[in-house]
Length: 277
Length: 277
Image (cartoon, rainbow over all chains, first blue to last red; front, side):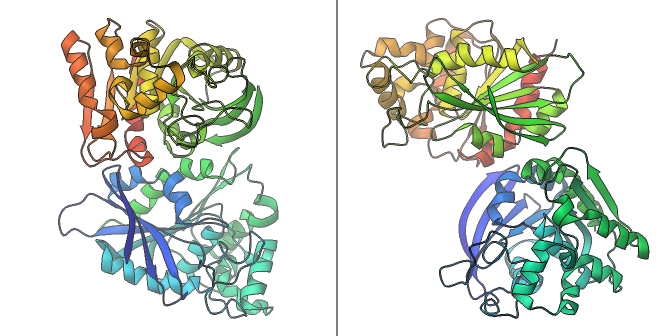
């Protein structure tokens, strides 16, 4: 692991790191905030998965998570959203290819070799974080924004017992039911929609997967709400099977980091409460 | 005034605006955060002047001021650091020309026509803010970072009674005594260093100007501390004449927004305390 930068911030260390990923076959960059802590202490970890077009940098610069993470003693990890590099296949659209990994393991060409963000986030990066940082991997939470909200929900649903807390900001709740999902899943994993169900939070819940609890914030002025995010499908799926969920429609808020940063401290507090020893 | 964007954030409205400036002869962009408030209420205003290479956008995206401003009911105004546009003279250096207005009214060519950031910040923009926003101009505070800390200190010192609270993050305290100051003041206002004294916080204090009080945060790991910022000159100038000043050296912090954002809430609270009715 290479250290790209470290900056003291909010009583802790904000670092940016890179490493060679065996899963994606590329150099991957991610950021980690570690609050000051007692020598030898292990801290709970909250993962933040970012949305379309983003890298680790967007939330690292604009997410306003550090004050809350320092207050609660929580490590915050922000991975990239796709493999990068000149050798990695891409698409000129903003919602497919680089910056749009969708947290799947691609099976279709030319994506299958590099676009393995599911395995990267579920296995490879946690092992690196556990080895390199004072992280208590028995106390992990996960959240994310938009495509990353989809990632957080589906990764948590497929890995019962790994995440003690799960939340999302304006998540894509059902790739089976929106244009972003149609395009990405067709492209990365093919036309057989039965296979898509493991990458669809609502389908996973319908098929029996459960979360300990769930917090979602969604802005009512979000331009993607009606056509892509469709929060109500998640609310209905949870209600139908008795999955506990707190889904908050936030009046006047949009899809931007101005929205995310507003509710970030709430989410960190919510995770921290569930990640206590 | 044109509205470029508005986003709901932290229980208020973050706007970005532009207007034609008579002082600079250019279109100028600035941002304003207005917390929700009772109809007809007027709120105190904190000005934030940015540093070299910055626009309004840096602090607007990375400054982490909105939560504190909403909590205390404070309007936050972030101007640009220089005139902009293809017709405006520039220099290829990062520390002179566009992005480096130094909050002076230039007298030298080719800068004199456009580089009037002193008059813009002291007169033109406050009049616009008073007319367009629910701002109580009898309750103004001012702060800034680096070159903008220099701007905040000198503007407050030259305008007694206008600002009830003054603070700075890692300010340039004495352009008479650093390479950034030498270059900028020689270029914008000429070689006569006696004229520079009105653009030097320490010289202004030595010459009799006073602030009601003063808060400065400065990181000890700031790479510009020794060669450019020289905080001790300000500490000495204040001590010599009995100017009240709280100057805090923050261990391990650097010159970045990771530092600024850490202490922003402290500064907003400090201003708010002094801007009560």
